[in-house]
Image 1: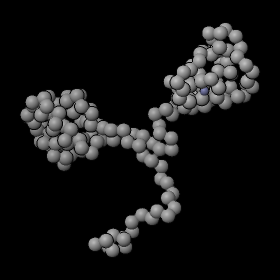
Image 2 (image 1 turned 45 degrees about the vertical axis):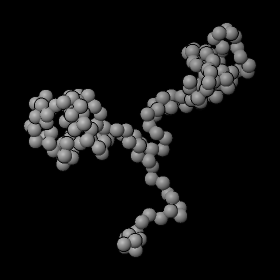
Image 3 (image 1 turned 135 degrees about the horizontal axis):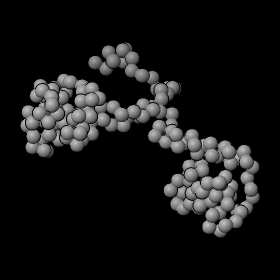
Length: 163
Ligand SMILES: [Zn+2]
C-alpha cells in the first residue's frame, strides 16, 4: 500500500482527514491530519506549508506515475513482432491467407510482417493486435544519457584492434 501523501510503501496505512479530504497515509503523515477512526486530532498540528508541500508532491507523483524517474517510457514495436504474429496465427490454426482476409489486407502484407521485412504502422499494428489478440508493442524505458566517467565507449580504433 502506498501512502497517499508522501508515496512511501507501507505495510499498513491510517485513514486521516487532511484539508477536508480523507487520505490513506503512513504513520508519519498521519500526524498532519485528523484520525478518522479515532475522531480526534493526532499529535501536533503541522504548518500549513508542510501540508501544502506534501500535497503538491502527491499531485506531482500522480501525474508522473507512469514515467520512470529520469527516463522516458514509450511503447515501441517489439523486436520480435514477426515471431509474435506467426506464433499467434499458428496457434489459431490460421493460414496466412486467412489472417490476411480477416484483416482485410493482402497476403503479401502478412508475409512481409512475418518475414520482418515490413514495419507496420500504428493502424496496422492495432489491426493485427485486435485480430490475433496479441500485443506487438512493449513498454520501453529510454534511460537518460548518463555521463559515465572512466567508461569509454568503443572507438573505431578499439574495433580495429579486436579484429
Ligand atoms: Zn506518508
